[in-house]
Image (cartoon, rainbow, N blue to C red; front, side, top):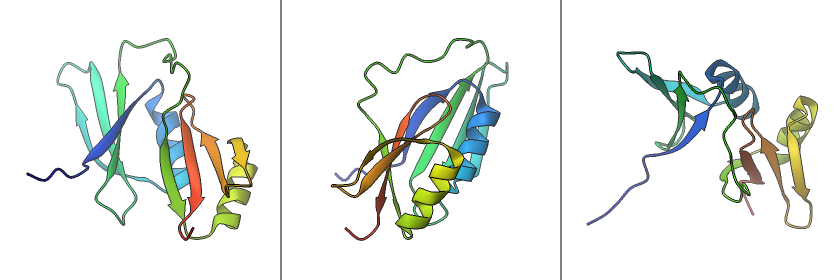
Amino acid sequence: MKFTFAHNNINVLHLAKSLIFYKSALGLEEVRRHEAEDGSFVLVYLGDGRTPHQLELTSLRDRTEPYDLGDNESHLAFTVDDYPAAHAHHEEMGVICHENPSMGIYFIVDPDGYWLEILPDKR
């Protein structure tokens, strides 16, 4: 029996704002979308165009309060082929929330407060 990663899910408060962020910050594109018949939720799957792994954004129609992320200790990680350019881009966007130069990584934060780790693809 073999299991294969399919996707990770995060819930977002403002879907349009999140879609803009993930496109601008990480180049993720919408792969598919599922909307509940009653309009109670929307699922949007984002992909990087290179791997089969996807990020599922869930938007709940009746949700009005930000999500409680607790200690926000979990995160998603992304490698990038041009780390200095990515860092400069994220710095310009104002989304870098933590840097660890000794490890050669940094984190960006999305509109809902989720942290995303950025690291060079060749470590």
